[in-house]
Image (tube, rainbow, N blue to C red; front, side):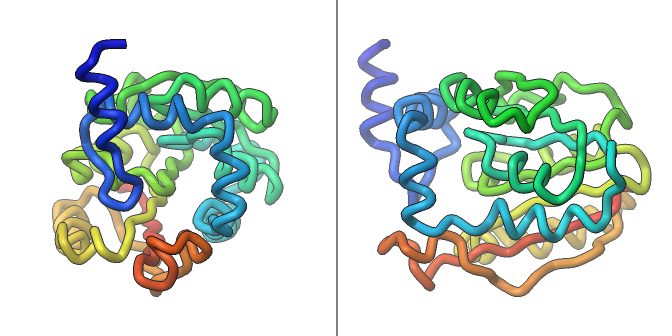
Length: 216
């Protein structure tokens, strides 16, 4: 590993985040062996909440893209609510190895989510979900528009955004603009929910908003 990559890893901060792909992949590769244990100790609720919101909109057998699947929290939570064909994509190869062990995924891909378009055909999926990922994406709107390409018409695009980033990035405006452009129709935008309530840096200060849209 180069000294530059090592420096990126040392400078990575979970609360601040970064959109530097090498820093993100390195950080999560290093964290992968203890990630699940740590996140459970922080009472990480977003994947389970996202699965509970998405599952009622799907039928058994639907194809779902887990965008930034990590070690498999969301995919596993979704499979507990039905039987789905789930493809997981993530930049961290070490995290993907752990996701594979869950048995929740039909296919896993190492993908840099900032290199668009993603290597998936148009209208290939019934749904796409991105939980706890958009903090690390330089152009979140571009990624969301690509997910609308990947998801079939009337399919569902589901994603989360932290409350601090929602405000700072004007995320409500992004959602409205994409609706006006005909990319999607908004199904639901939740009130802020708990994100990492037992992490002292997040607690009740940083929560998460879930958004579900129907691709047009």
